[in-house]
Image 1: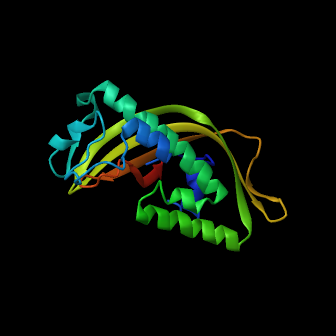
Image 2: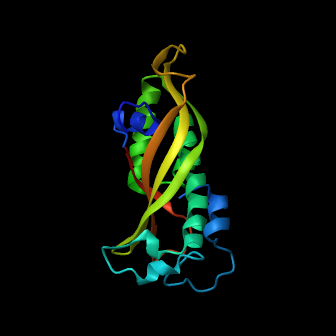
Length: 200
């Protein structure tokens, strides 16, 4: 994302480089307290196509049913907004439930750094203009789904005295992000966690 100040740009500048739990589990499946023996594999409703992916192989999205992609995107869009707003607020408790361990460590370090420097991020999430599944992929026992989000966000950085450091609290910026969500094929946990981010 050239010549634009976006949320992911902030993450990348400071070493910057799934989901609202209840909503995701409603959309992609949920665990209950009465499951008996653990399943060897767990496939959210509509995502059974992932079972047939060979290792290190990607499925072209035009070979995936549109309803499957739409179903996944409902959860992905909810996660995208929640992660962005939670990061801005410094809500590490919630982020820990939405990110892979390595991604959480990166986000957490940035939050700790800005807290030490006594700077704060103010973010207003306007909305998602578009979301598109780019790829379904399997790597060893991990399934990955990559999504391209184009969103509108107002974001700025202020010091402890509310002095503007960067950004504009009145300017809406268009952000073009590519996020990858992952899930362990052996896990009963239905949540897809944010595993990687990049920006155009």
